[in-house]
Image (cartoon, rainbow, N blue to C red):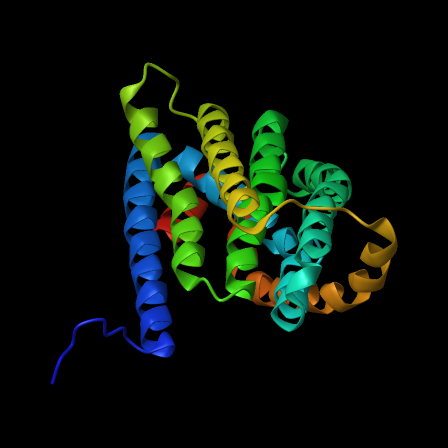
Length: 255
């Protein structure tokens, strides 16, 4: 029996890429967590955990599920990619105009001890840059290129791990404000890389506000569902940061 030219079945191949991506993200996140927790200390790490948890609750509303609509539409009609991808990026920008100010107001009311500059940068990193990278990964998922989906899914965590290493080696203050600067820079590199790869491999994007309005309602269902999950998993850290101390939040988040 000859194995020359043999290729694994698509399901096996795609499963392998997904497992590799998950392993890569896990390792990057573990490295990032250990370094940042030790560098910031319990108080500043608690402040970061409470802020990131607050942002995570609202992050599903960034782009209003446009990435999911992209996968659905392109999987059915490959020619719809330019408009759906362009509208997904447009959705990221439009929703950020609402989510960033909303997050600043909520943080001011709920977490008054957090510097607003840190909240702003972390919000931009997640709502705009992180979502743009996610949309890029989902674009390749829509065309059944799980290898590139896996690649783009690991770029952002890897860059954040690199930023964490730089955070402890560069002569900077070890507080949430300094970390938020490196965090947004790493997120920007990840977003630029993801969008550039998509445009080179799959073609240009084209925006259509008329079609965007038709897809908002469908995408909103995905956003509400994802937000319910993040609320369940993250609201405890934000509440602890409000009701107790950042030291207690840091210990709890680390545990």
